[in-house]
Length: 131
Image (cartoon, rainbow, N blue to C red; front, side, top):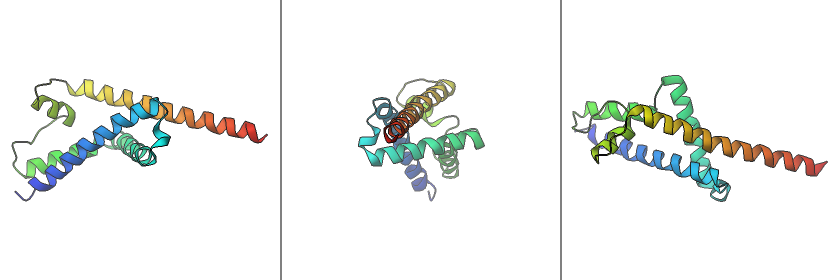
């Protein structure tokens, strides 16, 4: 029981992180991320943490924490595999972890790539104007 509350808190936060990552991609692609400074900083922070997590642990750090807490709580919500495929499965949407992984990687590449490209182009334009 003592682990159930932290597990639920991590699960809710985890869901919010997923939403911010996907919303951030759309705003980055539409070049609207700069208009929302809090979303911009949050998206970039979560995206960098996600990349670092996958590079160093091979998976999502929040998924690992959430799974550990659910197991310690002896909860029926305990699961293995990815969180997105797990929670979508609860609402009868079947996706495999590999598909979710590639959607995540693709969205991070698209979102961060477009953001970085626009940032570099902006810096290039401003340096040309100074000359």
